[in-house]
Image 1: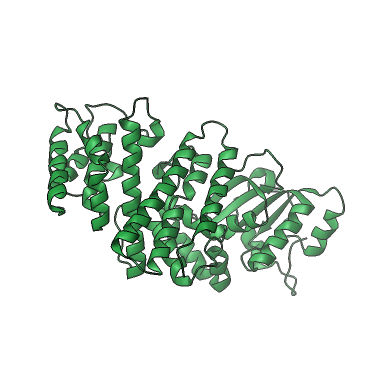
Image 2 (image 1 turned 135 degrees about the vertical axis):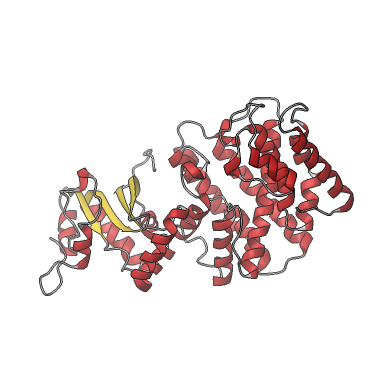
Length: 152
Length: 265
């Protein structure tokens, strides 16, 4: 189910996904499934959880929101890892470096609020949050919103 | 370009309301922050009008004033504090929220950058060198913010009932405790730093030193005429460690009242 480049080797996102400090509850969830798999899972009861790592920042804002919406229909819990906007002074160097390394697409992603922005536009509810890589990246645990539940 | 920011004001109210609805323990600090936001906007409007700022500076100042504390609601909900040192830099966090919610996408790039810069830097102790529009916008917000914080502190510290500890950043109300750096700043004629606070009375002195951090004639006039700083300082005890700093600051206020000059160290 991993994304694979045409030559059969794992894509860079797959390799970097191994560096993400996933919480224990997330580690067995499918990672970066392809669209066809997500669509299949929307027809049944859905999976308990799905992981997406570094798959959102290369997309446009609308494309990323659509992808998240599809993934949220396919899985009850989403665990996402991607770029994050700075929230502390100490985050700034790493966030600026991440923006430089990921080029125009990364900077565009950060300019629209990074991973938190993406999740907000998809209307998902954050239930878990863990920055890493000196604040340049973030793991979010997300569920579909239900009334009366608390957003953190 | 005009000064109508009504849609932004509506959004801010909705945002605050949605966060307040999730607050299960004590929503009063959130209500105070919303009130503070619109009071800062009012102060910014006065400074802009009094100084005769044109466009796009006026629009930048109004939007920055409205959004300067947009992160405070999330900060309180998530971390149960308004102390950045224990949670997040609410200025940076505010920029993240503005980007996340795409609040400024309809503004010109010039206005967008100036507003984001002002929100990001409004709570810094000192500003880095900035281009003119960004700098003036940021200074207007810093002055307007301080002017309203004086009002809030005056209401709470000099009011009849007990004050919320969050308002004074949970500093101890011990009249014998005094931060040496706070007193030194007051005597030397420069603004004191939040990081040097040791007590509520230190906070009173710090607020008085903000006289040295007002950048516009309109803000200096408001600082003196509103009377909040004077009342905060006059409540300091005659025989405590803050008495000398109190007297120096009250004398400076009196001097500004008569001459409209501020003697900087």
